[in-house]
Amino acid sequence: MRELVVISGKGGTGKTSVAASLAVLADRPVIADCDVDAADLHLVFQPVAREINEFYSGHQALIRSGICTGCGRCRDLCRFEAVGRVDTAPGDPIFIIDPTACEGCGVCVRFCPAGAIDFPERHCGQWMISDTRVGPMVHGRLGTAAENSGKLVSLVRSEARRVAAADARSGIIIDGPPGIGCPVIASVTGATMVLIVTEPTLSGEHDLKRVMELTAHFQIPTWVAVNKWDLNSGNTSRIEREAVADGAKLAGRIRYDPGVTEAQMTGKAVVETDAPSAYDMARIWDNLGFQTLK
Amino acid sequence: MRVVVASGKGGTGKTTVALNLARAWGEPVQLLDCDVEAPNANLFLGGKVLESLVVTVPVPEVDETLCNGCGECSGFCEYSALACVAAKAMVFVSMCHSCGGCSPVCPTGAISEVENRIGTIVTSSSGNITLLEGILDVGGTMAPSLIRRLKSLQKSGTTVILDSPPGTSCPVVTTMKGADFVVLVTEPTPFGLHDLTLAVDTTRELGIPFGVVVNRLGTGDDRVHSYCANEGIRVLMEIPDDRRIAEAYSRGKLVVDALPEYAGLFTGLRRKLEKPL
Image (tube, rainbow over all chains, first blue to last red; front, side, top):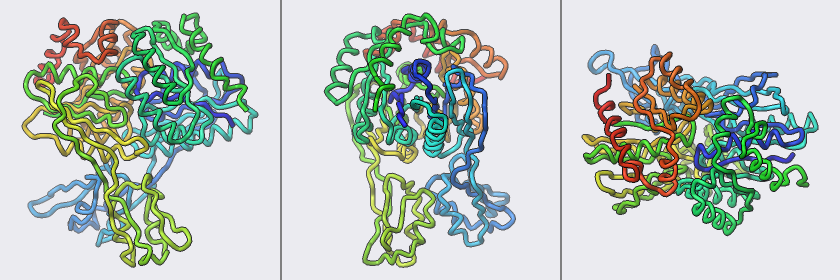
């Protein structure tokens, strides 16, 4: 199954606006929102959930206070600063796990001399299969201050592939997360192609280079588009030159256009409006040739 | 005082606020770039590099002459960083969270810990700002470990401003922990509002006082302001939608330097942070 992943390195360069437009232009796509800790694509497509599933991943340490002898071994062993000490009376401490710091490694559970630490499964969020006006959408929602975003991304992608195969869809358009860390790696590994949306700023340029190192490492065909290119045309030309030198193909430029925000306000993809940049996004879609890839 | 500048959505102006607040602070401040996947603050300061530190984390190493392939370590590891293949334990370093559990669970003492590089921390100086920039190696996944190390370098008695990564997951939580105040930067758009509500939930979950900065005021609508009013959240500062700010940013210039008329906004933000209501 063909998968196009839209990422950016730097946040806020227009990934989601571009991904939404490409999903509208695609013929019978499945849409996947892999930016699971700040998902926005649903604001454009107003999905109606077909199914909502709970996402459990890993475990979470929990001290049973009645059994804890207050020895503090868990605190000494924890490398994530997740064990807090509370002195109920002078010299009489109890220990508690901070669930927002616990990484679920199980060291304290294993080595507690009193066997006082439980290790239940951790609820980390939800994932949904929904219907939208352009096709099925698979999306996730990480819980507040939750862990394991990379695993939720992998799950969203594999479900999107399953839905696409079952429904004989032509390909999957994925809205990816910013950065270069584990959720990004989980979003791009094994994908057919990556489109990096950047902006003509020093930050955009710097973060593009880093994320391109990542896609080169995973040997994924990479395309680059410069959003708001006319904000600094000199930077745009330099970024494009460097991107090509580093092995990327140029997908096109998108002009600085208040119409992008206006589309967002009305819950539409840019290409569903008469914003001038709709033309730019349509050209990018044509240049990618995603639909005709073997 | 330790102030984290964060946002749910990327690209709302976190780095702009953190940098200009740091400059407008006047007195010496430490600025920590905790957006270790995409660190950008240094592009604007380009200060004199004082120190460059390689950050490592401990990961397991298996002595094959001692390993009997019993599978205790791979059974224990929650992150699938160890597997027993052909009766020997194998390490997958990129999966390892460095919890240190496998070494003591190994019954034959075959596992020791060795240091594995995850990134660097570069310290530089520019005027009143000492910048500590965390840079995660490309391909690295352990951003929280690098952020924890970066935060261990905070000086007590000094104002510290922390530039957070976007989102709401582990690297953000790691950045926010222990802060006195969180400034959430957003923009008055549907995406900005939605991700602001997620960031507010996270900040409340951690029990840290916070306020909001609205960037690019004039685009979008007033839904962010209505949300803040309904939730009793203080709007600390508004930055107008001014193309000159975006252009200065594109060239790597600070707003307070390129457009001095905005300097008062940031000194005003400092006053509000120091004298919360």
